[in-house]
Image (cartoon, rainbow, N blue to C red; front, top):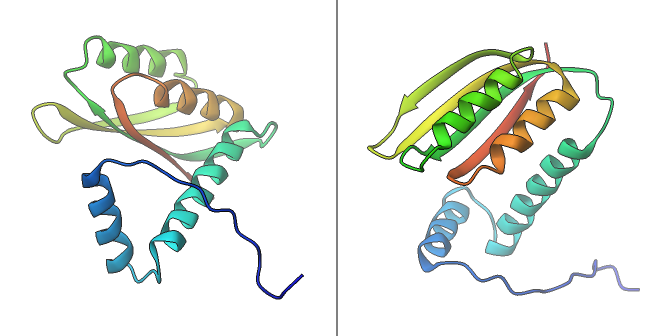
Length: 139
């Protein structure tokens, strides 16, 4: 085996607008290539996925940041219902109107990591949620 690590190449189909945004982002942040930027993005996705699947991590403190389409029928009600089901871990929420049809919701959470994962997963799978990120904070 040579000193160079092996790689697997595969194809990804993206809308042209997303490709332009990706190219602007990786170039402006100093990445050496699109592949390296995508590599890091995939690594972050896998890290988040693994966090969602781990059991028994104890108490966690953090924030769920969610961008969603406010004009999606029934979505706001589903988001509020989920927060009420997990009221034992939801400490606070902030709702920000971004445009006529887009809102940002920030949900401060504190409690069992498994419960935070359950809430995060429930919210991220709702139709109309464009993007969701969980950030853990070490107290």
